Image (tube, rainbow, N blue to C red; front, side, top):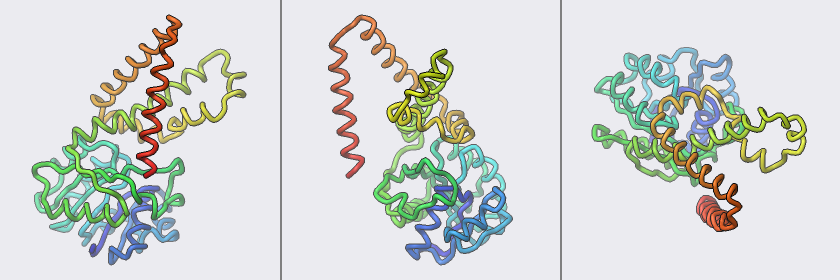
Length: 287
């Protein structure tokens, strides 16, 4: 299916893609490159790639598919560096959480004889690094693809084939629509977790209250333990959609606040509605 696949960025996502490709036998060769010291060699040791490289140009040379599995903030520079070393006819894709900005960069820097397809697998773990890579990470999960009017059908078909090899379900979205949707279900939840841990930790009662905090607080603040640099880049490349999502969230919180201050017992109806929405979503997610 694939002759030579190059994975740039060998953390959890890149490593998991490599493991799945090698396990399926869908690629004749999987090469890897990562800026982190010793990361490429570790990816080779855990079986995520066939061949590690110390230089980006060597890793992607001859590749028919190049996967950028780095934080979104690194992609602009990578595209600039790749422009002169990619093999004509190669297809480049990414796994970043925001798409419109990445696609704009790709269209600006990549040559005409190279195709780009925006991608975003909706999967992950709390753990990071190639040591946490899992070939089954993407199975039965949504894999968003965000083609534009200039996307070549051949390139779209190749990246869709990658998603299918990973066991994922392809969902096609316009880049801007993707960014609007993930802002509310991914980016705003992170900011919510940050706001909650900040509010609690800055409270004068935090010293004692922290001893009482248990699973509810843990689960509600889990995302705040994520990479600050990664989420910074996500927010900066999806600022309008994130701000819109925050506006809606703040409005809802204000409305709840007003009902609580008014001692309005009908607030239980909102709790019931939220409970039912959560249970419905959970059932769909676990299918």
